[in-house]
Image (cartoon, rainbow, N blue to C red; front, top):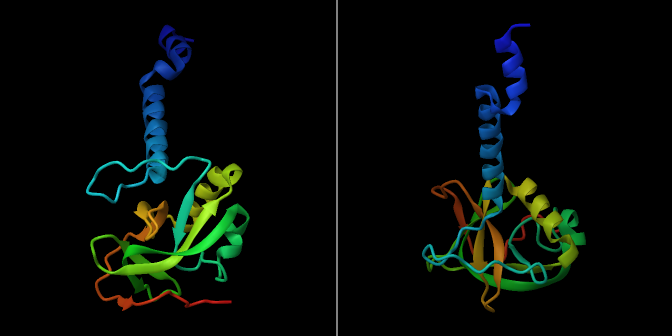
Length: 172
């Protein structure tokens, strides 16, 4: 074995290939972390992070109590109560609603879910898996002043039908 081959094997992660791999892994970790960082809904000012003791989600579609996907998150929920947040609701045309939050556009009716403290991390993973690719987590404030995570439609809403009141497209 040549000295160059021995040196590359010995250098391991310090080789150009090893450093490139570490950089790629770090990039993926940053991207995954970004999924869990909520965008502040108050003109770019950072929002206070909810404590593990009191973590809330605002839901307005298939994850509301009595709807299709609520059974997927029900075990994480300590309490569910009706709530309203500023924004606008649209019919996505795919059997679930799309929401755009904030901006004095009206209000969205839904439910505030208080999560069980011991299930918060698992609940966040489940929500992220369910909503990834079409919705992004944002921070909203309900009509009662509670800060919660909600999932906002990523795509443009041009051409989608605006909805009023509470969405009930798949009530069971």
